[in-house]
Amino acid sequence: MSKRKPTRAPATDDPPHLQPGSQIEISSNDPGFRGSWYTGVVIKRTPSKKPNNKFVVEYTHLFEDEAGTKPLRETADAVDLRPPAPREKVRKFKFSEEVDAFHNDGWWEGVITKELENGRFHVYFKRSKEQLEFGEDHLRLHREWIEGTWTPPLQEDKQVKESNEAVTEGKMEYDKVVARGKLESDNTGSKKKDDNSASKKKLKPDLAELECDNTASKKKGDNTTSKKKLKSDLAELQCDNTASKKKGDNTKSKKKLKSDLAANGRKFESNKITKYREGECVEVTSDEDGFEGAWFTGTIVKAVGKHRYLVQYDCLRTDDDTDFLKEEFDALHIRPCPPEIFMADAFQKLDEVDAFYLDGWWVGVISKVINSVSETKYEVYFKATQEEMKFKHAELRMHQDWINEKWVTASKALKS
Image (cartoon, helix red, strand yellow):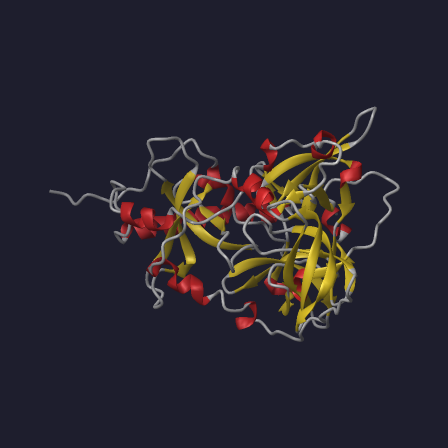
């Protein structure tokens, strides 16, 4: 009797990058991993009686065991998967450009804050509020995968070919895994692993289902919201997979990477910490799920410790609606109110903007300009939720970052 050859999962009707064996990049909403992309391979679509858009994936550089012998597998939503991002062979990076920096075996979103000598740069990571030094060989221009295309597009056609070759290489690696017997041909042996990883905690409010003209629909005088109600509004639209992720061996090696972005890079100097005065108008941000990338206006009430302040919101109210909400923040989550940038002309496609929504400013990118006789509107793409919404010109402002006590505006080089 001839020995049965292992087979891989059959092709599906999914896009090419979601076919079994395709090499991909995987995004995660786990604390400490937001804003990063790790390479991996699609194993299969998750079996389910109900329609779903989830896939079993295997990481290339993350492992279930600390010895690094067993690649980590998880269940991921299709919106968190994309083809390997293309990259120019040679590129001169510039100050304020948004880039991905290769660090701890993954690509992390950041912005160039200083050009050094010998092709080296300081890169600031918004989420961890740290700066590291990288060589140009560890950087690539930041791109978004939107509706099956890369934004901004790659200028070198050769790189597109290389990206396709990377997908083919991933499939070859997949075949090797199958040949080693690590995949069961009947796809039944991985059910327990799927259960352990299918409950990754996420909060992805479906912004597209909310009213886009939010300011026009508000009743007169109804211009404040309790934070509890705001969280409730966002939570009602979250994805089905909001159950807490079980603690287990699947996250051991992942947790080791969460300690500090500076583990392998060279951290050069601490960011300047701004000091604030009582009564000063500021904006504050939170690391809570569902609030990443949002800034809310408030006023400094008083200092409550070293680099910590009590802040009263301008629009968010207490649950009983008797007063404006007060919360404590460290200085890294506070910034002055950004200066107004007068826009004589309309915003342009790919402009990084803040959109005023639910009493806060949410960072996004203009994906489409809608011109009409009466007024110009814009479709804004939100990276955190991978959703789009329409906004009026008056509901947008140019995005700025407060870095080392200076305002930095996103580079226009993304349009080139």
